Image 1 (tube, rainbow, N blue to C red):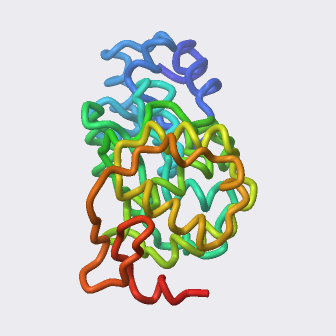
Image 2 (image 1 turned 180 degrees about the vertical axis):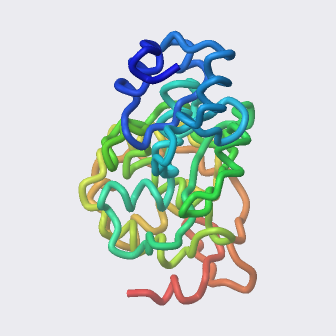
Image 3 (image 1 turned 30 degrees about the vertical axis):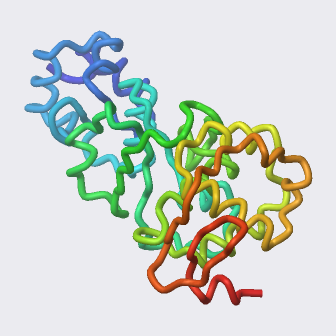
Amino acid sequence: MGIVKDKKLKNLLEHWPAGQVATTPWLRQMGISSSLTQRYLKSEWIESLGRGAYKKAKDQIYWYSGLASIQQQLKKAVHLGGPTAMTIRGKSHYVRFGNEPVFLFHTHDVKLPKWFLSYNWDQKIMPVATSVFPKEVGLKNIQYQGFEINASSPERAILECLYLTPDHFDLLECYQLLESLRTLRPGIMQTLLEECNSIKIKRLFLYMANKTNLPVLDHLEENRVNLGTGDRAIVKNGAYNSKYKISIPKELAAYD
């Protein structure tokens, strides 16, 4: 059966945006059953990316088109965060995007599809499962390369960068990012700091914000932020800051 005679196939291809990954739930919404999906696969109108995900034949897909489908079609609570969110928002002059990993944040109960994690994207996918941040605070949909994706605001993204330090993101680079964030919103920042349950992140942020005289500090109520008790060693043999009781890299302490 040709495409002209197959009205469902014709309708599907006409309403399937270029570069979009189609998941089984989306295909069902388009009236495409499992048997039709198999027929279109055999006829090479569509190609499989793995169980439950497809692309149009010879179509070029990217990690962000796959992420958009996970968020919108599968309704998975996963978002672009940390250094990657900074970069696509144009907030960073320091993060090298070329071969940098794509950081995706989600809670421990969210499982990313196997087809997404195993596909050979142009960049490495780095899922980050954590519950230290409040759900949905500081998240917003943005347009990126023609796709709508959910990503962290600068307020949340900088805290996520701190979560990744020092093992997955350089702390000095994180400081350089933070010192350029002169327009952080106090309300969002206050909520994030109060509801974040990582003492390390909160102490590091306040230490660096003070060091760089970040304007948002003038509007934050630090006494409402639980900073815990006792010392925290971010690195071994570091420089000790008595105000926030943290040991940080000596090069950061000396950075002017």
